[in-house]
Length: 278
Image 1 (cartoon, rainbow, N blue to C red):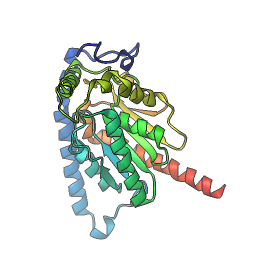
Image 2 (tube, rainbow, N blue to C red):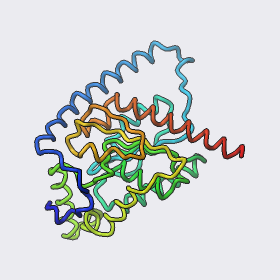
Image 3 (cartoon, helix red, strand yellow):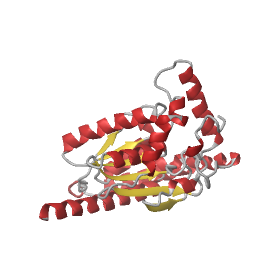
């Protein structure tokens, strides 16, 4: 897709597409998946050695919803969700089967999902978003801090959504062409160059409201997006060494996500206590 199709404001000065060969770094996802398999095996062995009465894990207060990246669905974060549940988190799917549609529509769908979880659980929700999912999370946190207690983004190029590999750009171009041809439910030109794109980008630049935790996980080995675009100055930055795709399953990343969720939940609980005692 030419730069004239993708709005120039989506790739501000100072950010660049990863080089064409950078995508080869994504091959390390095989190793990262292997790490998950080894960790899972070790966890099962440890669990078998632990007496049944000692297996109870303290339940985290804030529920967690996981949001997939571009072209992906909830299944891509299933392994991370499983690991979080083992750590006591109550996890929810976003109900996004394939993140290929209008960004504003996806955000509205996710917002509705959050509302239902908040009503059911009586507490705000933390959002873990991979790539585009993280950008959706940040926008919702800005609009609806009453629903969101914290967000954790992974490889989400919030500062420059257009600073992505040419192969990803080609995928966007296909979706736009199919949308022009009349295929419903796909990303259209409005989503990459029109008011839809502008609104989504502007929301991603607004300050995250007080009381909403924000952690941004990034990797300099990212072969899909410019890692610099993932380091939001308002977030707690956490650097990892994985591929872009591998962030969704590498146990080292999952450990960072777990720590961030616990830290943000604790900060949220302290704030609630202060408000009640005021």
